[in-house]
Length: 326
View 1: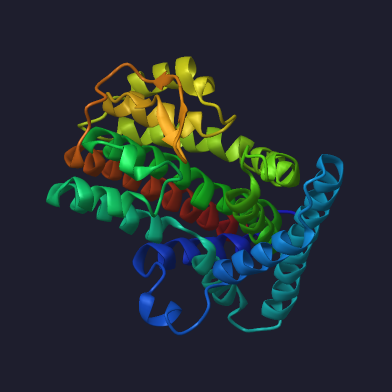
View 2: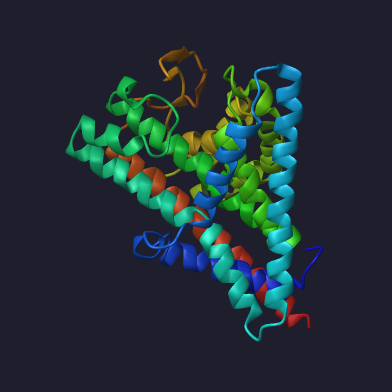
């Protein structure tokens, strides 16, 4: 915690985690107001249209400038809000409200539940729900593929959408949180290995890899610990598959939470899939069942919910220790 009072940051983080879990992104609010991440996405799309060029070297330079400019602006906004909230009598609560808006656990949980419920209703229901959380072609997925895709997205986005922003908030305060969300959004929009974004989005993709390096590994350990507290999960297998398979994933980070989840629950994840009609022969992670269904999505949710509870408990314990030392 380099820039703010540790007690302030821990209290803000705890408030943000609880708000995100209890309220999430309420439609009644965000149907009337633009969500900050949606505004950021519109700004990135606008800059993409105006700055992108087909020439590789120019695309790389412009994409790097776009990435650094957006991240710098996001961090500056976070710094400005830090100064503003410091002058308020309930500044930590205001910071917690800002954090709760940017943490993504509540919305992720609802989307994954929607996939399980859709799958219970039929194949098309599952396909319609899963398209909101994965980049692969849902029409190419059968029931088992939909279930695996939902569980993989749950594990990966628990790391990217919650643990990583929280990690950088605890380290750098609101500037770290805002910068982390900006990097994550840039990567989700520009960080593709397609002809258009191979060069233009390279800086966004590489920066996102660096941002998530430590959080992804911490998330995996958190999931192993959660498996140790669950009757229907196996912490030893989670650790074994984590050690063996985490680096099989094409992403340098996503394989860690996916491997821990696969091992803990006796699943086989990743594997061949299709993006935009193009087949991708990805290796399997885990050596359990691949024929997953809605019930397995609920099992994965229970595991990740335990990991979330451990995360909240860790932040709360940190706040108690810091407060007691004063």
